[in-house]
Length: 384
Image: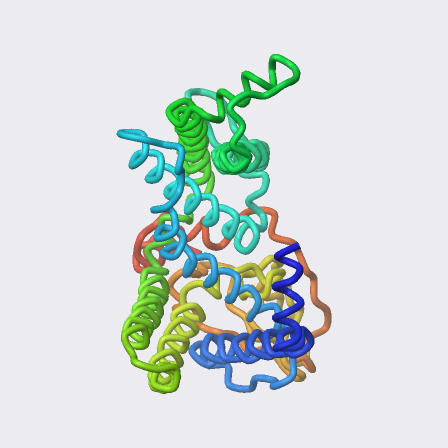
């Protein structure tokens, strides 16, 4: 009831329609800026202003950024977690809860935004074949339950103390349950065991993911600047909040927050820019990114090639009214953005064949090597 009353009060101050409109407007503008930065960096200048995909791109950015930006807040709030734990169990329990919850959010973001053709990826642990999709569901359920049980114990214990019941009439199991809740050490120990189980499941799932997705280490090394931009955003908010907290009146606090707006806009632009260069190319096109989920085999008319017709397989980057822009499938260096962009006029195309990428290429193929020059040398050595 309190939640509903809070929502009603907020809706009276700011209409829900205005909030939704503002959020979609922010997502659209953000999506346009991300697309413009990425495509113009690749030399693709013509960019339509009106495109529904910008909303999807902006929503993906807001989701990933919100999860990563919420992790420091989560760590701060976890200091007050596990009120039942006492002594040596308290610090360890809070530390485990922070690690498990942070890892859980990152895996959820990875699955929702980045995983496309990797659902059938598998690996071997102790000579046991494990498929990613088969391990994901038990991990999500087990970890969620293991994190919820300590909170439920705390809630039931607080209710029991508020009722101030020293004895309970009724079945024997109710009396045992009541005594269990009244024991801080016992409930704290159970919460600690639950979080250790969640930690074991987390470590196991991390091993499965890193062994199944060979491109992840390379990807994480490329998003350091993006994560740094998010941390700068948090620092700017904290500094302005610290000055506003010490201000004398509400009017002065409002002025301090207004002074901090340019810093917030600068940090926002840094997040968008680093996201467009590092994260956006690896978000599948089906989720509002530029990572190719299909291979375009373009058949160019013979009259435009001089003799025989030309067949060119491309990973599509952008489609405009007159052109297809893409990079060649052969020798693609996806993580390094060094591939030349082909602009194919639509008027010269006879037919197009679309083939869905059933394997995590080109990023998994590219991450088997560490430098673009090594990939070029291997291609030259093969004679292709």
